[in-house]
Every structure is written in C-alpha cells, then in structure tokens.
Length: 74
Image 1 (tube, one colour):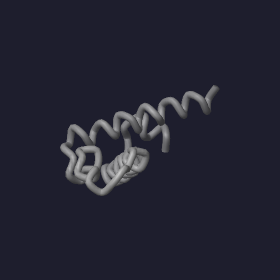
Image 2 (cartoon, one colour):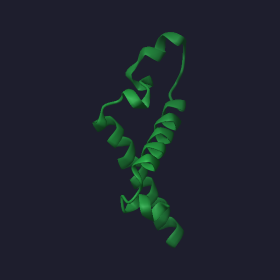
Image 3 (cartoon, one colour):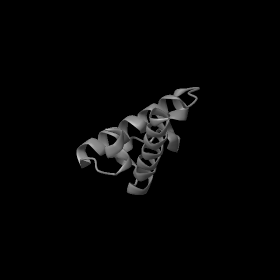
Image 4 (cartoon, helix red, strand yellow):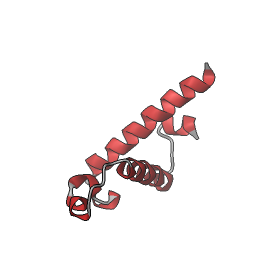
C-alpha cells in the first residue's frame, strides 16, 4: 500500500478515503475552544474544500508514505 501511494498508483476512491482520513486527523488536532470557532476555515468539511486544498492532503500523505518506506527499509 505504501509503495502504491508513493507511486501515485491508488484507485481514486481509495485516494479520497486516505485524503479524508488525513484531513480529519489533522482537524482533530486543532485547538477547539468553543463552538463559535467551528466557523473558521480550518473546520471546513473535506468535500467542501477546493481541489487544490484537497490535493495538499495527498502531497502530505505521499511524503509520509515515502518517509515510512525509507525507515522500514533501513
């Protein structure tokens, strides 16, 4: 799976699943100090993000996969 991610050879449906998971875990780590803050851009649902913003998640997923693959092979 890691090699498929690094090679960008992932089915579109699976890619969106990885992106949603990465985005949700990032959002879960954001400071949450009250319901009034939920209107901030950081809390926009994944499906409402622009393609450019969604692609940023994929770039980070690929970078993490590359780093993990490298550490596993050393």
